[in-house]
Image (cartoon, rainbow, N blue to C red):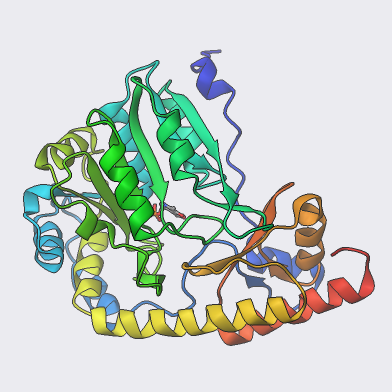
Length: 370
Ligand SMILES: Cc1ncc(COP(=O)(O)O)c(C=O)c1O
């Protein structure tokens, strides 16, 4: 047997989330609701479906490896030069490509914890040290749910090549504000690249949560990651992008890019989605209204929920987490538990969220959980 690298051998095996159709069959109901992956409940945009149909006839050819049309559309949209943009097979692949571009073995990657679960994994695969800085309470007496930017700054050392700041943070939905983030960016050493992971940016409603693409201007050690998977409804097609002040950052990521990994269909769909921004904004406003309704419904039930700036809410249930998520699954609702910490619930359609709330009430009435 050929052994993989010890680091890879010791990685946890991928565990796919529950499939709603399988769960429904298993528990003998017509339909299960999945509120686990931070997708939007809307179907693909009409313009996307049209673009996919048109592009389907070109799939005997390789994609444009430079994603020239998409890159130009992104550059125009954000008022940057195409050289400052890199596209990737989802933002997650851009995270990996950044680690490959910037981290030698023995270097480090800093990030808050708990945050996006890929950060520690990509550090391990890069043989880099993961510097995890615990979240701190966002409200007096509240649970640890927001970034400790001073702690993150203090944890950066000479070996730190990348710092991820997930804003809003997955899975807590909390966000760092302008003054604190600007102070942090101004203080991070120039040899460390700050990656503002803004996968959920389109759901931000607090005007004091800064737009990373505005913040990066004039800051050569800052890059922003965004994705078409969430607000733009293209999770199944895999497109993300990076924008950096310094074109050398985008260039480095392009060098570690897996060739042709942004498919022809994905590129065509992303261009069409960008051209439908008004419809996307309209959909995001609906998600935000539903987020607020869900948050209020949970608070009315006496549960502690932080203000979310994303398309999910976080229930910090600690040791109750696994039991609660299992009880919801038994009632045909799939959420995303982080054992011992909390449950992340994606904002679904109003009907899906009502199914979730009814299941929650049922769990709470019948058991000692919560
Ligand atoms: C914070 C954050 N960054 C990046 C991603 C990756 O998104 P994608 O690879 O679908 O573009 C996710 C997905 O869940 C995320 O939550």
